[in-house]
Every structure is written in structure tokens, then in C-alpha cells.
Length: 264
Image 1: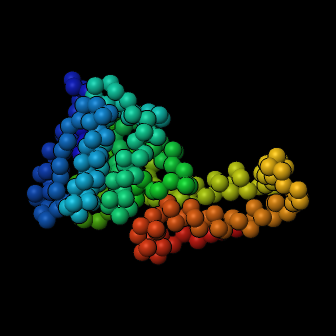
Image 2: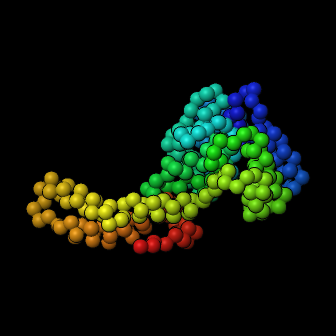
Image 3: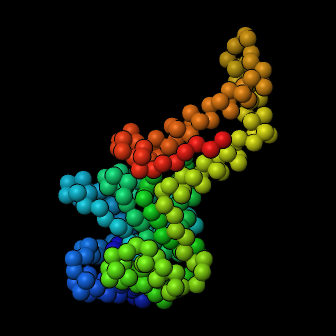
């Protein structure tokens, strides 16, 4: 549990940590519950690097719960320093790699689900799963929702029950949840919608033909031929994106762990 609530404000992180400690003891054996106070963006990134080192050296798979202020652009920490989503993506992704793509991230910061918006198909997955608010919430709403999630998880050891309890404890639509597989599938669907329509293929083909012309290619392929090449290349591009995103080059078993198939 990473706490960067400004001093003097109601600290939901400390309260939630204390409750979790009690539940973890009562329902032992349970995962260890740790608390870390960070004041700045720099300290937060250093803490993520520490988690990565622990994962690599001690075979620990952490679940990160992050408490701070935030908006569509990123996090604001206790000292007022900022870190945008693009800046945070790399250290969090490196931690996810260290966990063999098993990292779960929960964000108790306003619009914390926006982290997923900076992910590109050509990236590696930054997490296995993500939970974050979809809008500005008050401290009471955040505390109630996450207390229901974690306390149910510790008492039942059933993630599905924990998510159900979180849903019952809050209003519909306040939290966005996704997995790396769901994120990839949505990303590919968006890629198809924006780059693979008839009109988009026409534009791409014309640009390719113009570049070939500028490069001095004498036998220029027609626009239709270039469109055919782009269509034929689609499943190859999908496979490359999938291999990178799910880290199949690092963990070959992920090819079967994440059975995402190409759909024309």
C-alpha cells in the first residue's frame, strides 16, 4: 500500500492498511500487507524500482495499491510533485516483467483508470490487471469500495467474491476494471477501426506509394496492390504485437496463457 496523501488530509491509506493488517492476521495464512509512505514523484518511482528488485530477487509478486491525488494526466503526490502516465508507464511495466506479467494495480486516485489510455499495442503489458476510478470520488467512497474488495478477498480468498463485494459497496460505473488481455483486445479493435477501414487503407496506400516514389523506385506498385499488401500483413502485425505485449519472447508459456486469436 503506497500512501502519498497530503499531510493534514483524511488519510484513507492508513485506515485501510490498519484494517487489512487485522484481517490478514485473523484469516491467516494471508498475503503480507506492507505500507510505504512516499512524499514525491521521485520517491514513488524509487519505490517501484525497489518492488521490482524484490520481485526479481525474492520471487515476490506484489499487488500495488496507490493512494494519492490524480487526474486524466497522472498522479499528484503529497509534496505537490507530478508524474504523468507516460512517465510512470516504464517503471510499472518493468515491475510487471519482473513478476512474469502477474502485477495487479489498484489506484485510489481520481480517474486513476486513465493509466490504461497511454498503452500502445507495441508496448509490453504494464500490468496483469487494473482497478481505478472513472471519475472524481470523495475519500469515503474510495475507502468503502476498497475496504469491501480487500477485506472480502482476505476472508474468502476468492477474487470473484471480492469484486462482487466492491460492486455492492459502491454506485455502478464508478470504477473501471480491465486485464491485460482485455486491454489488448480493445487496443486491436481500435487499431482496426482507425487504420484498417477502406478509407484508411486508401490513405495509407497513397502515402506508401508517395514514399516509394520519393525514394526513386522505378516500378511503382499500384494503390490497389499496396492495399492488398497491407491487408495480407495484418495477421503478421497482430502476431508481432501479441508476442511483444504478452512478453512471449521472455516467457514462451504466455503463448498459451493468453490465447488471443487474430480476427480479420
